[in-house]
Image 1 (spheres, rainbow, N blue to C red):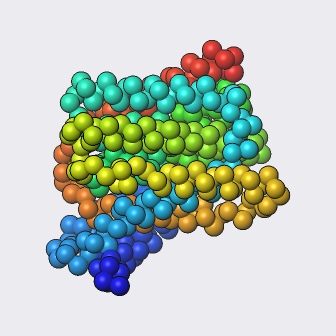
Image 2 (image 1 turned 135 degrees about the vertical axis):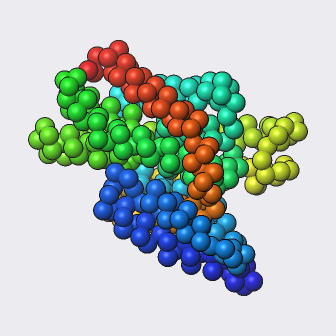
Length: 343
């Protein structure tokens, strides 16, 4: 009961701030609710002088609610649907993810950037934007400012991709399948993938076929959250055991290992088995919607814990990394399609 009393003021504040973020995200889906929620949180934070009574709830929302959001995200993954396009999309997905992570690693070394920012921008660019960042952040012990900065970088290139990729695809003479693969493998966030694919459908009169295909490719990409987060967890465990410099302190497997990822996997298995058995896919729609809202709620908390001035001052290197990752992913996706004879 004491824990509830400590948490509820901050949780209530985050709930209030998440509502305009959620509504604005629906009005401007290319930007997305999480970005609006972070911005609103940062603005409110500048006038929030007495933070003591809110801090426990803000911390709970930015950490625990974020993990619950990832678990619920699993209900949006029907593995049988993903398997249908896996043979075609998997080589491209593996290539783009590898390219992005290698670029992030090289730039981190070259520019001496913090590990956490580099990892978050790398996985956010290569896997699925905000969802990948939400899953990875607890595993590597990233703080709220690092999460906010990486989300901001990813958001910038989401918008550019959603606006320009349909035109680029048309100029290159892409087929409908080719553009669906391109959008699903080269655009970071699901909302921007759907925006670009829907634009292509409108321009080419494909009656939603490209949107459906690109979304399935994107969901296939989302599965990479599992091996990436597990690999990072084992790496962090090894670092702690050998006395390496790892944030958030002493060795505790329960704190380091991402058990919430196992629940994410379980949720996707439940969805797959139920759908194959004849259950209506709409049954899982409320869980998917709640997942999206929980991410917005957590981002409002992260915004409240973020120093806007510091974020702007230190944003140059992460943005440069984001540019390089984005360019690398775009080139890798197009090159792999060309090699596979899909362009």
